[in-house]
Length: 539
Image (tube, rainbow, N blue to C red):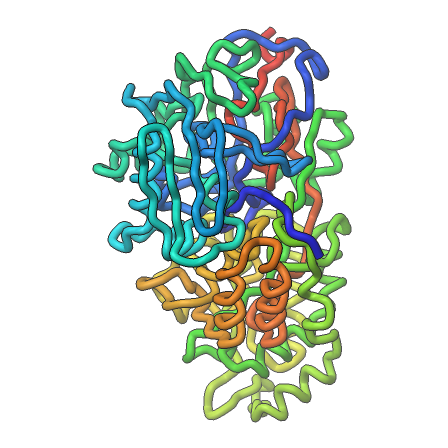
């Protein structure tokens, strides 16, 4: 097991994208064609991004959009894991304190200067509970405060916090006016990024234009005048994977992530592509007290009844492998296997005995009941790909074989999020097999698996694992290297109680047609400053 310095951002995802990040150069000018001047670039996301304010969102689709409009203090190379300057030209870390020296001359879309004070105000805004930022307690530790003195930003926590540099340094920071009026960028942007949002058509597209005077990208590799940087960017919202594949094959879009059954035909076309790893399968059980999945025996039996290797084979179309931990997006902060030896083995007979021993008895209709309550399960799944639907059908068949009454409720990416993570009815679902929480850093997950449920918190599955709470609290007070072992133990506590299970990971491809990127994707997300449009796309 080893710890690594990485970016740290949590996102809620049900698609092929998983994590916001940057990365090191991976292709040079002319390697895939000549760069175009003032071209246009089009890509896709698989769900409407909603509110575009970077401090009040954690949805993958929103982070993809914001990667074009907002910058972070540091950049983390996705291949070497080296930390490089971005908005900050230098930094130091001593104990519980970070110091960043910001570059001079950074400006915002509204013409104001972005200073160390702006960054401090962003961090303190996140820490104000009145603002209900999902970054509070996840990306930004709960005891964080920030201050500025000239060009120097100081960030301090009351106690040690793991991966502090990468957590704070990876935040996408908005400009001062967005804190005074957060609604001002709900459907626009005001950041330091290379592109500014000019149009938002909900559930259809977002349009952006290149800014003038941009010079502060990592290593100075990109400016507003760099050849190949697009003049306009269009992000289409496309929920159907086959449509996405067709668009990138025909050049209707210049970049798209394609997975599942459509991936082979896009690979066969020989398009330029870059790969990354995503968490493609995860079982999340709702622990709301009125639901059968609040019973550990039910959760254990449901897992015992499913051959997770078969599930992985079906859900990933034979391309995936079993997940080893909660955090799978590279570069990993901690490298360990918290799954091995914790998940109940596949044994249908044992599953039936588990339920019988817990007092579940078959009624006249064959459905199990306990204390007059039937074992009915509303299972939310993502039906955007045939493989996902086939995997859901397999699970339903196995659980019905135990005596459960299963209702499969499928929908696209936005539907799954709306009916699990974002729902206000905490009892409306029992199991999610379509939602995944992606990150490269184990500390990020604690906020979503502890604390109060909505609306007071973001513990959307109403988890209350005392051992996980104890261990995650302990790990959160240790430096990164020292915390990894405790994070592993905390995840084992979740899996031993069958609270949730990461099932599968899948290598995914980000395909390019008429464009490329000078950075590899981190979890499928590439900052706007990495995009280069090719001459072949504008002829």
